[in-house]
Amino acid sequence: MAHYLECFSKQAMRFDPAGQGREFLEIGRRAGRFPAARYERDGVRAEISVWCSNDYLGMGQHPQVLAATKAAVDEFGAGSGGSRNIGGTNHLHVLLEKELADLHGKEEALLFTSGYTANDGALSVLAGRMENCLVFSDELNHASIIDGLRHSGVEKRIFRHNDSAHLAELVSAADPDRPKMIVLESVHSMAGDVAPLAEIAGIAKRYGAMTFLDEVHAVGMYGPQGAGVAAAEGLAQEFTVIMGTLAKGFGTTGGYIAGPAALIAAVRNSSRPFIFTTALPPAVVAGGLAAVRYLRTSDQERETLRRNARLMHRLLKERRVPVLSDSSHIVSVLVGEDSLCKTASDLLLERHGIYVQAINAPSVRVGEEILRVAPGAVHGGDDVRGFVEALAGIWQELRLPRS
Image 1 (cartoon, rainbow, N blue to C red):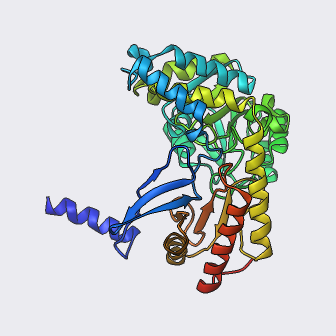
Image 2: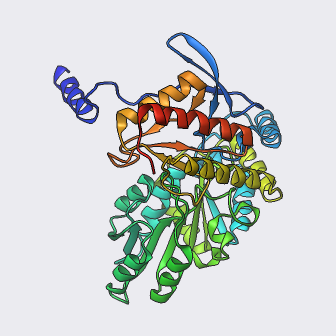
Image 3: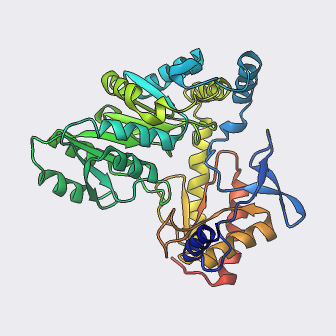
């Protein structure tokens, strides 16, 4: 036993020489009062304001979502009872899949227990079952995409992040008769920049490539009825498969894909993460369905999100606090040094009651550490101004780099 413990202790020290490891702040989001949350650290209890949540629109606290969730618990109980194949399919699963397919203008949709398993489970089948398929994947694609392609066993080419010219160069050099797939994210999860979807759709059409578009940080927040960036640009039908999540803009949990019926059937019948996983509880599905339906009829939350993001970007630019991109609602403030990033995060919490988690490797590359700020629809303009003033003061104190 000592040998095994020594082995993993050495690995832990290699990743974190200080021996502290990743820290997780325990918080309790206050229902109906979010972004307020309560937390306790070192025996001190306090109420804080959350600025790093992926619940961008506050739908996890929306009265209609909570009511639907509670009603489903009363009707169906807490769990689903099994996998979708073995007693776990509830009519709510079917209704939500139909709603998502309609949202994206696709023939069918399929639910997974998370966005991670949706990417992993779908790509392992869609790429792996096409004989001699060649995949072109953005270099900064999410770990779930990387794992899905790895599990597919497919040959792949990596193109520079959001570089359509490099993608075109790689695709044009491939055998024209070989099946091809292009895989990318619309809004990048860490940098917050937006992919050149029109250019990439044009490349796919020119060379006959299938496309798989991850819109997890876009569904709910962009496009008509919250259908995503591709829909906002009138390009939804140019992408073969749209992948999304219920855990961010829609405020609950779960992932999904939407696309042609034949492709969805292949994933449904062959994807191990789908087949061998207990289905989402009906109460979770009911909440997700309520959120999707609500956001198809309301633009108020999306407009508030855009307004807050524009304001924060402008104020940070005025104070020369560097951000990676001003293209979306994700405001990634570049610190570039792990210990200073953690220090800035700690000072925001201790002095101002502001919670922004420091993001370090492997979520970002070493030397590219960020404070990933998410001004949401739940924040007000004065909240944004107060946040920037607090951050600017700490930036000055720590003598962090200016843009």
